[in-house]
Amino acid sequence: MTPTERRVSTAQETWSDVRLVRECLDGNEDAWSALVGKYRRLIYSIPVKNGFLPEDASDIFQSVCLELLKEMPRLREPRALAGWLIRVTTNKCYHHRRREARYVSPESEDALTPNETSRAPDLDELFDEVEREQVLRDAVAALTKRCKKLVSMLFFEFPATPYDEVAKTLGLARGSIGFIRRRCLDRLRRSLESKGFASRNG
Image (tube, rainbow, N blue to C red; front, side):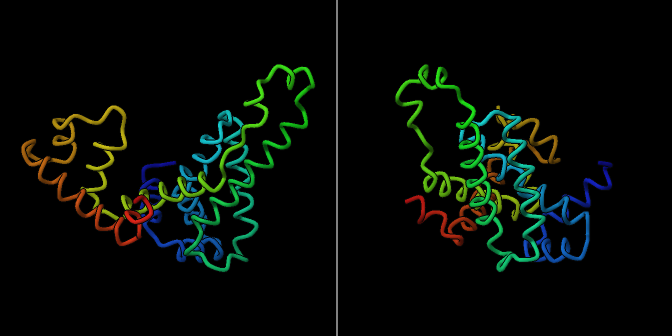
């Protein structure tokens, strides 16, 4: 992807799901790339949380994208796309696990402990956790460009970016980072509260 294509895709990821779906149905390939880019982390996070290997997570991701492409014309409510993707991906994980189990030899089953053979993910709990993470990602994406970059550097990178580097990247005085950080987090908190995030997390 060229820098120009990357900028276009990033801009389109800020479009609403309704607009992205409409553009995709109109044959806009950039909108499809933006839609997949917007929800890539959400989709991948589910098989990862289920303990799948990277190659299996990639297979599930591709399967979910194909399902989305096939079912998009029949989506009743594009605003609920994130929830639809969570349900579809969770189901794909379940069926992938069942297919895997068919090929486990009796010797391999005997080698597993009782906990390993009976343990299954709590799908309702997983659904709620992934949904909360997507609400957080959406709220961060809706911040101003500077706030989004600052919050990402300080809270979504490991290890967190040092203040000196944050100041240099954003063209700010180091002493102002703390104040701007608080202001950005206040905006993020208000956005999350408006989406019911705080109440769902107690």
